[in-house]
Length: 220
Image (cartoon, rainbow, N blue to C red; front, side, top):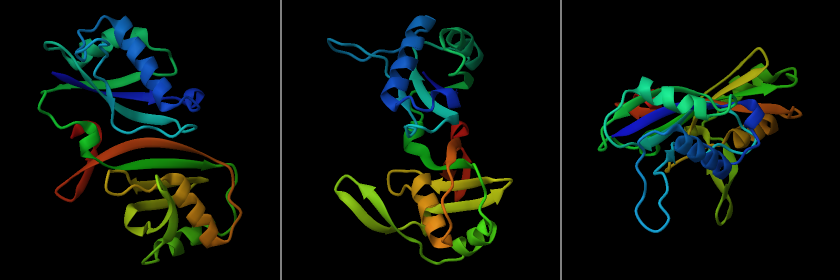
């Protein structure tokens, strides 16, 4: 059996890297006394996986991990044991058991919703967002393992809106195509010819895709 777990990485921990986050969660799982599955070999470790790493500096409101366990257990019983072992800044919000054959969240991931809170909203940004989305192509330079490469990010932008000083972005996040929030923000403000304000970007939700529609990843 596997447990799909939703947790929050609060703003206080936003500068913690992915490996440190994984180590913190592994320690908490060991302290919890849960019946966990371990790898084989000389250095057994918990078979813990995350749907997608968070960039350093980015909080996450509904992050998802998969924890294989021995035997059967309800989501409520799992949380009851794990929550006391975690710091307040890393709360677990929800859990549900699935069969071992259930596809991993990482394999089902298709998109993510982000919220960028701007410290100031430049005049004309709302009109710029509308014009930005009206483009058939949005050329950009994306970082890859072999250097910067030109790409069209327009197909990777599913939604973009401005409300009360916050930019809401739904962007592709999968193996075939990923648009990072920083790349979108750079492209948007360069297109608008506006100074880019400081922004704290939070990943608020992840999605899978089925029959052409997006669903919360934890429900897939």
